[in-house]
Image (tube, rainbow, N blue to C red):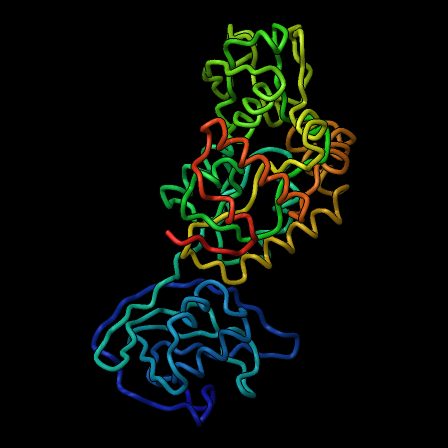
Length: 391
């Protein structure tokens, strides 16, 4: 039994529930300079109300992790909570309300509410998928600290779209072309990857004059760029080449196609092969349309909870744009690139906000894709940020 001097007199007492589910949650302990270590209770005989425990935990951890799942159950004030009789209850060293109570382990338990019994567990963390390439670095700068209830994963654009489709991701930075093909997607942020001219990292490399292209090897990680290349080839030369795969890790010398669409970090390197024509697809698009081009947007399936996530994505983007020098330095170190090249690419070739001109560019891209049979009809109304589409 915990000594009476260590627990406030006002704490209510109820009988323990018959069901026991142990879940250990490690919590760091720390003493203040003027605090003395009280004797830890070896058995928890006194019971606390759920509201008392929630208030204490929330003041220490701000509703994150275990506390977030506890708060998320929505138990009303005064709801009783019974811990296992064999549990050891130790709270963080702080005044509660005027005495320090030690904390190290909190065993979770079954809570009764009316006739129903719910087992407290960690709420499933939302899964966010981001692109592995350099162009995504400003969008995820500090995102882990802003979306504490989320898990951030990285993959190539086409795979992110597939994982969002099969619901293994809740939110993903997907190619614009994939957004139009998914009938139940919605944009969840005005953060994006776009360009207003040369993009540097999305290229069409041709061994023959572009008007003579018959076969086109397409980057496995790409979706939007493949559609963009087909639109521009058809608009400028009336060409509809046969597509061939160009897997990740494949060298340019490994394909015999007339031309290759290459994206990402490997498109930024000097090519060891001589080409007759090289198109920067962002530049060719802008010269033809006089509109920005949007390569990727944050999207989720309709019905996915995005509470607070739009603000976290926007805040991470804003912070990344404000600290492009730091982003470039960190990215260059990880990727083996020059800091100057990383900064030039992020600061001068890309921008990251979805505005009216970007939406017009997306609309034109969608109409051109529909005209070539590369996107389904009836999806243009989905360009408004935050709108949902009736399924």
